[in-house]
View 1 (cartoon, helix red, strand yellow):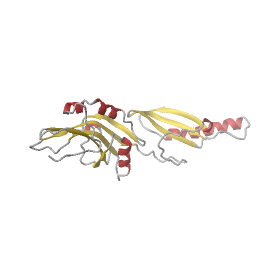
View 2: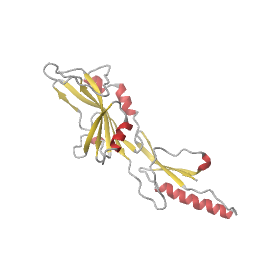
View 3: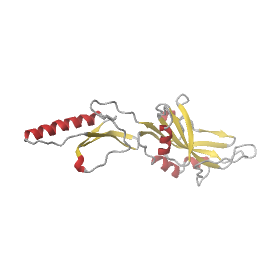
View 4: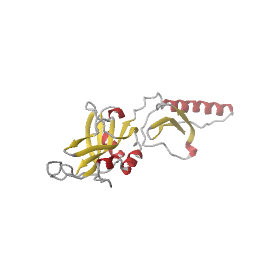
Length: 235
């Protein structure tokens, strides 16, 4: 029986179909895989990979469960809007009459999709190959964050993280709880801060005031659960 090898090549200590499904190491990796920059985790620790023929683009095999590498693959693939990364139990040899149930190994796969996909589409649970059971575990879905709409008077730049500068350059901050990201909340706060600081300085007979020249807007989420828009204002 021809041998097969995989870039990840992990072998569970209990190298059975059940052992793969219950492997604590694989489960922990999936749970702890936070969303990379520019993405939101929309499904976690599923037992099936996404089955969406009309949205499916391509896939690649990875040497590790690396969501950043999968995101980079998506970013460089035209029209990619979401990706599904998962562990797959695969045979170390091609199953056949002489080896109907060969020893298993584990591969990491990164599949790309042209639009948003959901947990309800995780319907590829594996298959039988002779007596060998092909299974999926640790299946996570990450969706590209939408680009914010243009805001009059401001130029938007996408950042990998939140701005971290000396506090002397800060001119305000706020958190707006809600179900969606809204950068206009931050630019409105910046405008209001400018007006308030200017009026206060004028009333006090001062010739200068602390301006807001930049507004940093970030979507705050924990393990894929969004909480609201955080704003940082800077001079």
